[in-house]
Length: 141
Ligand SMILES: [Zn+2]
Image (cartoon, rainbow, N blue to C red; front, side, top):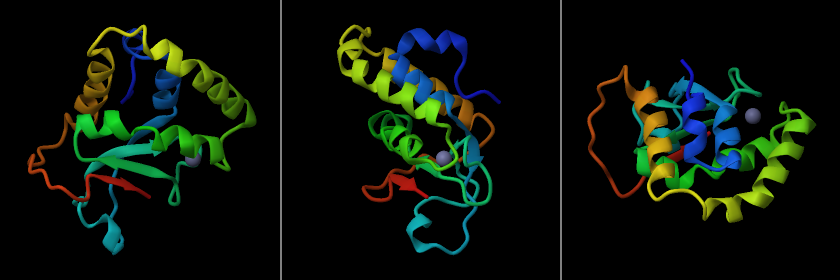
């Protein structure tokens, strides 16, 4: 399953699109770590495609809005990921420098749609309940 599709590219800056292109879907595999207990086993999340494997970096968000507001964890990881190529880090750094300016040219609501699309693809197969809490909205492993 592709998380981002070519049609999504116009909705966000190249920085955001490139970042999310470096992720693939995953599911939470709880191994007794208390910090993850706010997310149930099998909860859909995002995984870095470069260090993918048993010790990959994974990202979990409680809602599409929280994903949109906190996805910066992902480029921060990519820039320090030991498995990601140097060329990726160079590209990401360059795109990030232009991101703040380009962001002002997006149409209102477009970025929200982009992350909602990703969210819908991640969660299309699962029927989790939508209860929201004040804590445990984001988990980074
Ligand atoms: Zn990684």
